[in-house]
Image (cartoon, rainbow, N blue to C red; front, side, top):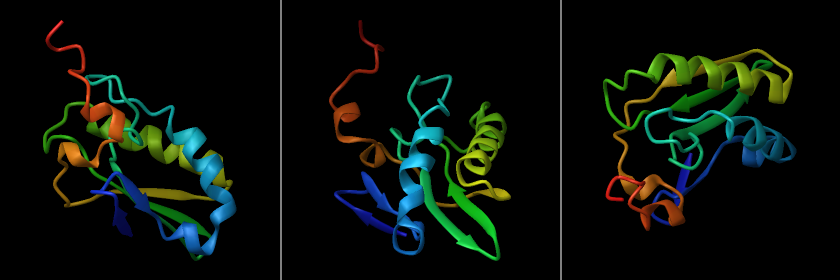
Length: 117
């Protein structure tokens, strides 16, 4: 995994080994939304790595807070959608990296997320 542009765009291992899969993966994972924040796991920068080894796809994902009540559900939904996107078994691991707002897509940092309306 390589972070670029202040962590906003993560270069996954599959970008080198299976670049043709990224559009399908992004399309599927964009549907996994953090229910508290209303943004996808991709928009929030929670997907830190995706790689393929031994005919399986493995994803490392982090959460916005260590004890996110929706974490288990989001991890399972991401695993299911990843599996559908690549048509092979998938695993999703909770990474140890600490999330911070610089990992979000650029436009999200410029909003108040509806908190101050």
